[in-house]
Length: 61
Image 1 (tube, rainbow, N blue to C red):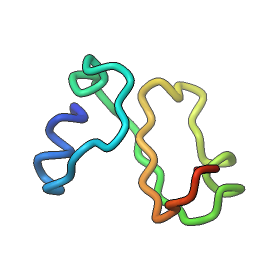
Image 2 (cartoon, one colour):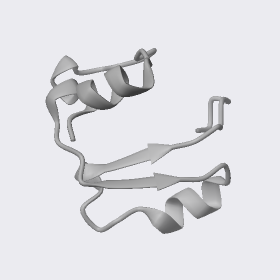
Image 3 (cartoon, rainbow, N blue to C red):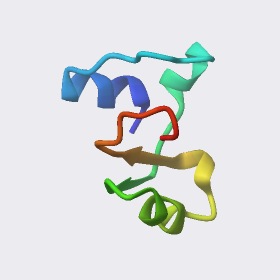
Image 4 (tube, helix red, strand yellow):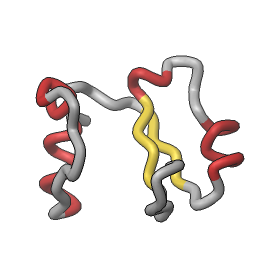
């Protein structure tokens, strides 16, 4: 699923997007966590296609 579609389904907006082409990138994996240690452990080997959902809101996330 493309990031643009995910944003539309969640009624979300991007706050900091360095490259607009990211909106058209396909994501095949999703991970959800509120612990950064879990997030780092969950990243698939093909992290270019992994989408992370988190409730973390500080600068280190």
